[in-house]
Amino acid sequence: MDLLKKIYVKINQESPFENEAKYVLVLLRVLYLAEMVYGLAFALLTFPVRSMVWAPELLFYAGMIACFCLTYRVKKRTNLIIYGVFQTVWGVFFVYLFGWDCGIQHFMFSLLVLSFFSVYDALKFKLLLTVSLFALRFGMFCYCRVFDPVIELPGVRIMELQILNSLILFVRMAVICGFFSSNIETAEQKLVLYNERLEQLASLDPLTGVWNRRSMLNYMERYRKAHPTEAFTVAMGDIDHFKQVNDCYGHDCGDAVLVWLTGMFQEYLGEQARICRWGGEEFLFHFSEMNGDEAYRMLVDLKNHLNGTCFQWEENEIPITLTIGVEENDFQSELSELIRRVDEKLYQGKNAGRNRIVY
Image (tube, rainbow, N blue to C red):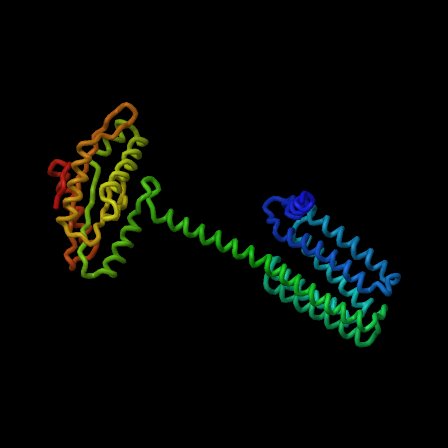
């Protein structure tokens, strides 16, 4: 188990170059190791003519080991070029030795898939590669139609090689496609989560964690379209003398007051009201399926509790009060008009002495 763990760690080793993902290098290492096993199976099938294929096998294994080691030393793009050249050279060489019927030339299909997935070049380059591989494969076919293979294998061995090579081709294609599809799915999941996070950040006030103005307006528009005959009430609250809090105790204290008040709103209004930070020290409340009287009673309870509580800042007790304007949906006015009227009532309360609810 320790040996397998060490092999796994070695295969998953990072690229030595900065800002270069390792996953293509890991794939190449897996392919090299798999093809070493394939080389052993190929040698066993060609055992009757072992003396004649010993040298190609040695070259094959030496090349595989060298290419495998290069995945730890050179950049990804260079490794892909090396892999492609090596696969092409030994494929052509083995077709030259054993003929077209051995089926090794079909490995070019997996090479094509690998290049399309892993090389971020222009489409014209990939099309050129496709044409080149086709021309090479067609050239080998024409050559084999004219010339006999260097090593004649028995018909049974040819059939066994065709089965082996077909199996290896499908395995290689499955590994390559599965590897890249897994990485694509992972990247897509991360992108979805990232976009969701961005959307959430864009919809919330970063200080208090409640909706911002845009989110509240979107919600109110959707709510009105979905429930055109249902009552709702809009209220706007403004912290009294908030500038004095900032001037006397600092902006950190002011921020803490906003967070503290938000928690109180959520505690006393609960799920019955949507809350947003409208701007600065102003908050907007949307009471779904609630007329003005019902919303007013809830806000009175909130105001009374607030009047009996002081905000603790260091060794100071700071009284915090709210002035609130309330406006019930009249089923005729636009949302902008309702918000304008509730804002007017808010400032009526400010002008009348603050710490009151105008309904």
